[in-house]
Amino acid sequence: MAYWNKEIECMPPERIKELQLDMLQKLIANLYEKNQFYRNKMVQKGVKPEDIKTLEDITKLPFMYKQDLRDNYPTKMFTVPLNDVVRFHVSSGTTGKPTLVGYTRNDLDYWSEALARSLTSCGVTDEDVMQVSYGYGLFTGGLGAHYGAEKVGATVLPTGTGNTERQIELMQDLGVTAIACTPSYLIHMIDVAREKGVDIRKDTKLKRAFLGAEPWTEGMRKHIEDATGIKAYDIYGMSEMAGPMYTECEERNGIHIPWDIMYVEVIDPETEQPVPAGQKGELVVTMLRKEAFPLVRYRVKDITNVILEPCKCGRTSVRIARITGRTDDMLIIRGINVFPSQVEHTLLQIPEVSASYMIIVDRINSLDVMTLQVELKPEAFSDKVEEMTAVKKRVEYEMKKYLNIAVKVELKEPGSLPRFEGKSKRVIDRRTYE
Image (tube, rainbow, N blue to C red):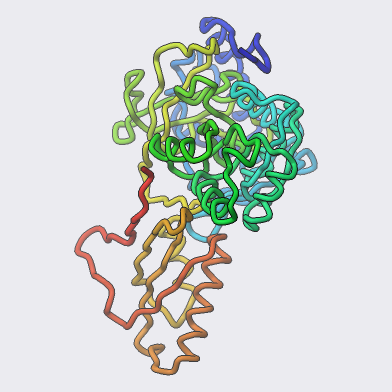
């Protein structure tokens, strides 16, 4: 069994708890001193750093929410001077404002360290060629996987997304052995390869795939593996944590969370109290080492549970089960987070359309397709094709600008979309993950 840092990865649980408590106490003391936002939250909750005497005392601390990040945009949450920040990443926000995360040099090193451990636990070495087909840029996926693979010593092929036929050619020509991308994009690649007469199993050296950024199931894993002969691993993370960081190991029985980087809780989303170990609930995370951007008891909204039995790989860190859903209305479209409230906010900026809309999500040729049906305002409705085409193009442009994904727009006559009593149903998700 290969380890990146065996002393850390196989440390006795009792010692892990001691060190986590020390890290938590130092983190909270630092935030109380340097971060006015978090100090105010602690004062409102009636808690001081000296009240954290055990790991269980973490429940005395206030939760953090995505709204907190938006309210403090762009850099009010930071705990270091901006000249210590060496990178920004930005994810979509629910009302047009994005979530901005900053990183110090050490933050990037911890991020790469987490990926190095994860990739090593799945058998990746310096003899591998890793194709990174996540998006590069503001999205954390591409650069996260890139730097983690380089830290292991693997050769990285930074293809990003799109230009699929070329990606398949490079996969063959350069002897790619591992790939990181969304599961739906890998299925699309398999289909395109088949159309080109390329059999992934026979005509490439691909052995492993690290798949995440969107929901997928054991059924989809089996479909991918049956079609390619590779092993597919679940990878988990988000921009606030520092992007994709954590994977299953070779046992593929839960995602290992490096204990010295992130502390996890699982709570009942209604009572906000911890659930018994092994029971499903909402994931809550505390980043123990983040320097630039604090994250303490952050409510992720993902549903999972802690896995109780020790992992056969020998690693002693806590594991979480595959994410099975969310407690909010967020959609994940091709790895991008999309909230209906984002759509509504954008529509309100366009004078020709109303706020009556429907979102329809399909999976076509293994890729997610989002269709937005939106009503025109009566005064904007016209039988002139060129006028309607201009409005349609503007809505598509604005959606692309704010959501960072292409949206198919269908203009509807005033009053033609369903009206709802009580809570509206704005989303029809017709995708399946089996």
